[in-house]
Amino acid sequence: MSFFSKILLQPEVEEYLGNVFRNKELISALGTLEAERKYESLLNCLSHPPAFTTVRVNTHLASVKQVKNLLFEEIHKQFKGLSVPVLRHPELQDILLIPVIGPRKDLQKQSSEVIVGAQCGNSVLRGAHVFVPGIISASKFMKAGDVVSVYSDIEGKCKRGAKEFLGTKLFIGNGISELSRSEIFSSSGSLKGIGVRMTDPVYLSPSLDNVLSSYLFLQNLPSAVVSHVLNPQPGERILDMCAAPGGKTTHLATLMHDQGEVIAMDKIANKVKKIKQNAALLQLNCIKAFCCDGTKALAIGKREDGQEGPPFSAESFDRILLDVPCSGMGQRPNMAYSWTLKEVTSYQPLQRKLFSMAVKLLKPGGILVYSTCTVTLSENEEQVAWALETFPCLQLQSQDPHIGGEGMRGAGLSLDQLKLLQRFDPSSVTLQDSREEDLILLANKDCIGFFIAKFIKLNSK
Image (cartoon, rainbow, N blue to C red; front, top):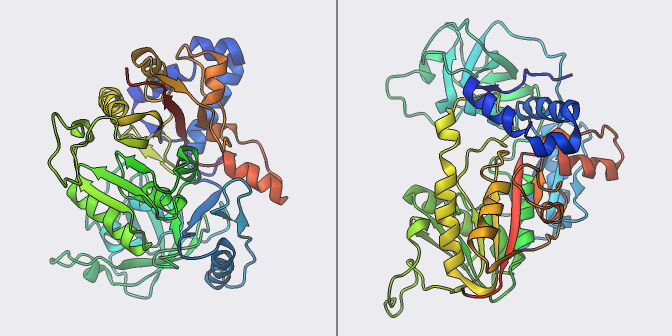
């Protein structure tokens, strides 16, 4: 039984996604009832947070054992003695897993209320406190120090500064207000700190803001798998084409022991700044970040002597990670997805432009990994089918580690090709045991929706 209702979609988007998960290939293989069950399960899973908080250890600065012990002490302190294990992933040696406790159904709702935006609410469900910019409304007489109930405005209907909100709101926990209502909604509007310190969230996860910040990086499990699948080697030249905020970039540099060159690109300057900040925080020196539109990353003609940044020469990278902009329909939790069908389906052309550029920049014998955090066919398996038809030089490769499921039917790929793909599908969760090995299997499934394909470039034609 789900704690929250299933994800709220625009009717045209729900119809589109329903057709994706009821395609003829899939129904032929699974049967109508099983295909329908998986689709409904997916919609329910998307509105709930993953079952684990995933932490990647910066092995460049500390051992996993050291960080595991420090993290255990921090969680013990935050949870006031409550015993919560910190598990090391057996196949991803730099990954630690912390089980999420919840949903906690016995929390008492308070008379004083704070309404937060949907994005802020999603962050709270994954362990964050409420920061002032996320607060939309607060009860009329709320003072600093008051115990308040926090609600998420999932439909975006609450007006900023309202003293009461009677629309659709979801209870996400209780906390203590750090500021009064008047301070939060002061005319200056420049406050950025914590507005409500969560003490009893519906889903209990550790708050890791500024905790061991040089030693660990919060990352979704499949996002960490991607870097291991690319498998960068010390001394190689790596390109992360759509790199912000730098989680995968810094992971690649760490796996290379900070030896070689990791070029990170993003077309938004503030995001490039964030990549540089993360690289500095984790003390990684082989990362070079540039502001560049990935579709314009190929140099036409000769590059200038000593030029470090883009555009780059053809066939100049050993490995390329292409974690493309996408519809983001695999992100969790997401109780209301507001995008229109036009927006959802707008990404395929851009992804193909970026992919074509990546093929040109990749050396013969090089590895290209394509990934998304969405669940559609058009951005995942259909893109693989297109790539194999468009670029005869590309060949699908097996992935290691392969802890997700195989690709989804519906794009005309063979069963052998589907087995080479990796699709993380939260609707496949069935385990409810508490043994450590079962918890690891649960973590591999109960995560965000994600897709990975790995290619090798056989020749330059």
